[in-house]
Length: 300
Image (cartoon, rainbow, N blue to C red; front, top):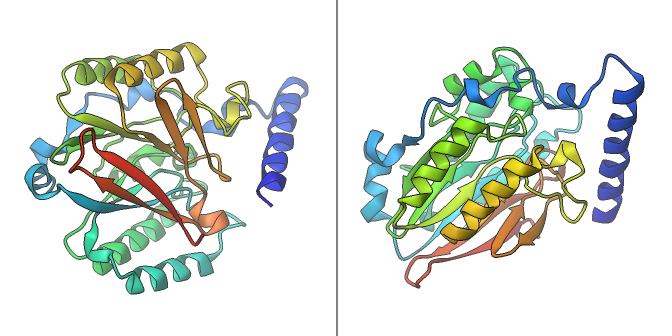
């Protein structure tokens, strides 16, 4: 079944490329967003460990062995979105025996399908239900390309999605977690410069989470709709990650998911929540040096 979905995605992507040549109405740019300039969104790297009292406490309070909940590609408003997947998730979460070990949750973008305010409100309701089931925990988000499809998409993301910015970091005892804005398919010169500066001074082991993969499960970086679009920028980024010995690059966007390794940098592409009804638990162990992270998909 997974091979079938990969073939469908491949055929769809080839159709986009062909249509872009023969049509003046559809281009690869249209596929991505209404706002393709990430530099307009980046004004600096926000450090939540300095600006948010709850997140600041994680530097000492989150250590040892713990869990992180991750969802991606909810696509509220899409024809394929199945609300029964959401209800199945909350049934599972309520019954999950180790939910006290979940210290925070990550949302990896494409929460909406068309960046409409009604879709953002529906996602906020899902986040509220997660936080009610996991009292005292936060859901931290990064933006996806579909979340930018309207001209006010980013403003709505800032309004409805914590931490109300698209580029930030926070710390646990031995790890530092970076949320990156790849919603337009690029890092952009500003974000890349801030990232380079921050990683060069980082004493802790970094973890990267974002929306767009740097490769699409063996299909290669040429498949533009499913990978970072500037291969030079991507290679600079991978060099930074390699030198910083990151623990992983966690992303969504390519709905069937799949892992990819370049040198010592491993990408973990996670399957879509909205389309395939999948969510993930990261088992983090900060008692070892360097810390370790293992990835578990639900339902299996």
